[in-house]
Length: 394
Ligand code: TGC
Ligand code: FAD
Image 1 (cartoon, rainbow, N blue to C red):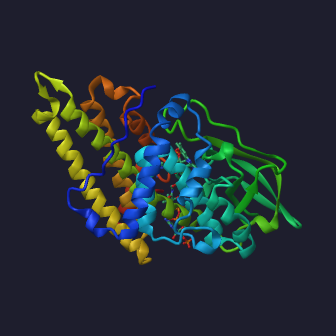
Image 2: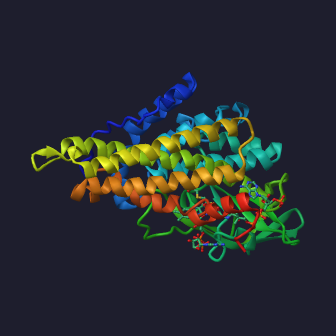
Image 3: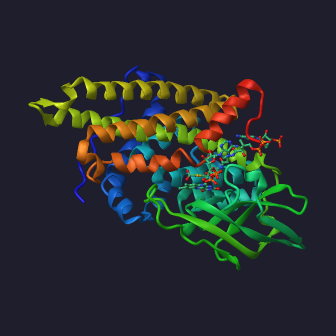
């Protein structure tokens, strides 16, 4: 598959770079350069083959995108939330699946071990996860419990110095290659607890999910637990209840708010370039009003979303961002990115459906991004409940 040179430049219609520090800009340059060198040249082929590029795990560890907000003493980057957001934007600009790998590792595996784990768990797992020596996954969703994880059936039963884990999880990113899984299960009192399950534990398997038309370069699978003996020292001691996994989701959803914007920027940048080069009726198609309308609306939505995620980053840094604010940004970025990918694909005409350009791949990936970490509807209902005080979920 011929791959075009990656000439990406991020749109900055409102001089928003002035809101970023030197450190933020350095982080952006480092991750953008990595994506141009290591991701753009290969990702289309991996997506076409529906194969996970396993070599990126170590590369992403070396780049420092796993757990960037985790303190340096545990192998993290000790950076702020805007740096984390920028990393996710740049990775998803390359491919949502690459950002997914980093989101899961950092926000859904390292964060719960850091925030809810024992000192021994932090020392044992965090440095290896940060460096990419270990890959992790996060098991919350079940076949019959997606939007309503509180109904989960996966359970642990006390058996002396260990617990016995039974049940199954579905749609789990990274599962087929994961060395460890942070799994959420109900204890005998029906309360949700987190356990760290290691590959190799008897009765634990991770079958791959095949046939996806979206996130094809990301590995998705199931987690199946058949009387798995998990030592009690692998239970996360410092959280109980659904707020445990939902607290992790807040971090990951924040990253997706920036990430989906990266995919939108890539689609806009690609469509803008194409509109200046493609001649029809003796003119570049960008000279026609209909195409300008699409491009002008894209950059307007990108600019609004850039402002929203930057402000959310400031609130995250100050510890003031609420789950509802995070939901609004995740939902908005996914919606505008999905719409922008579709418009960009149309601007590219027939070329838009090929793998020669990134747009169709982004468009298909974004169908997962708008669904996972809480669907578009769920985030709307979170906003609805916040502003009206009425719970419309149940
Ligand atoms: P509810 O009663 O509202 O809440 C239970 C407890 O949790 C607290 N809480 C939160 N805490 C931290 N962060 C948040 N975002 C929180 N949201 C709620 C809440 O205060 C309460 O605490 P407490 O102390 O009172 O017990 O729970 P509910 O059962 O009514 O559910 C609410 C709902 C529907 C919003 C929630 O279940 C939900 O968000 N559903 C969506 C499920 C979801 O997002 N699944 C994602 C699975 S992981 C994934 O998709 C990874 S993809 C990764 C990738 O590849 O990038
Ligand atoms: P359902 O909950 O069955 O929803 C179906 C439809 O009903 C949706 O449109 C939804 O919005 C709507 N709906 C549901 N409840 C309501 C309501 N109360 N009011 C109105 N409408 C409602 N999960 C993990 O735990 N870990 C992972 O790593 C992970 N990775 C994923 C990777 C991919 C590629 C995908 C596709 C999913 C992944 N997920 C993961 C699962 C993901 O979080 C769920 O798919 C998502 O939460 C939705 O659950 P569901 O698919 O069961 O849909």
